[in-house]
Length: 97
Image (cartoon, helix red, strand yellow):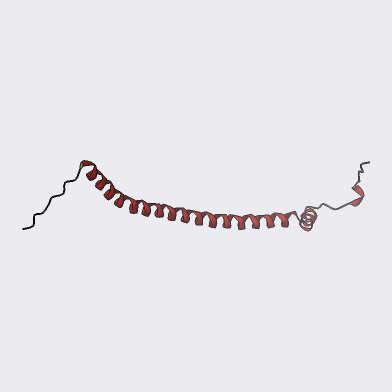
């Protein structure tokens, strides 16, 4: 009859096996956690890009409105509505030498 030999492990070998098992469990868990954090960051980046685009469009619209209100024709129309008249005789040119 063949006799089975029992293998005895040293204390350091038991610790090494436990560390290996722990690493085999932790490495995939940290990988999944890292990918989840990356996904959250990407969602936040896309939200901020959309917000920036919206704000840029609002800024362009307001700039166009300001330019429209600053136009000479608009100023002359408002001045004439208020009873103001353009008198070129009152304009004096000052020249520097």
